[in-house]
Structures are given as C-alpha cells and as structure tokens.
Length: 133
Image (tube, rainbow, N blue to C red; front, side, top):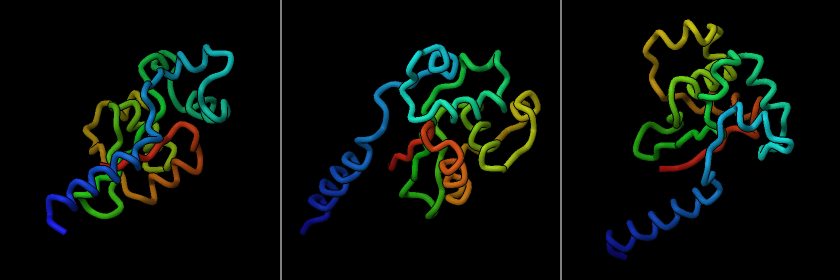
C-alpha cells in the first residue's frame, strides 16, 4: 500500500475518532441557567463553581476538550480554550491549588500529561472530552 493511501486511511480514522466532539460549546453561566443542562451531571458543574469565581462563569466554555497530539510525546494532551479552561484542568487534577486570580497572572503551558488528564476526567468526566489530532 502506498504512503498516500495510508495517509488517507489514517486521516479518515482520526475523523471517526473525533465524532464525539461537541459542535457547540457553552459557558458555565449558560449551562447553570438551563433547566436541563446538556451535560451528564450537574454535580460536575457545581464542582467547577466551587473553585471558580462567579464573575468568571460567563467566560468559561464547556465542555473542555483535551487533544491528544499524536505527533508529540506519548501521553501529552493540550487543553483547548484559554487560561480559564486550563485553570479548571490544573485545579481539578491537583496540579495547582492557587486561586484563579493568582493563576492567571503567570504563564502556563497549555499541555498536561496523561495522569493529570485522567485524574480530571475521573473527577468531572461529563465536562471533559478527549479528541485526537
């Protein structure tokens, strides 16, 4: 089989693996205002509320997408979104215990390792999705 054919098969497989990714993301404030938020458990939203200042809820987009970068080190995920989404993953996984007001002042890599990713997923699995690139 030629390399071109293998590349095509590989790209089609990656598209299939990403079928579960959301077509739309909502802010934490929007989800909390819905009678029936489109997440599996409102408990996960409440967990996020406890660690995140209310004035920031309108700026947090959910679900958080962790992308497994196949071209990079095995077990490395990038956190899609901005500093708020990164803070949630860092805080939930235990990578930081800082308040958001302090966390946002520092520069942070948008990458996390597999153990941190799965720790966050175990704690708030209904708001974190894994994708592949």
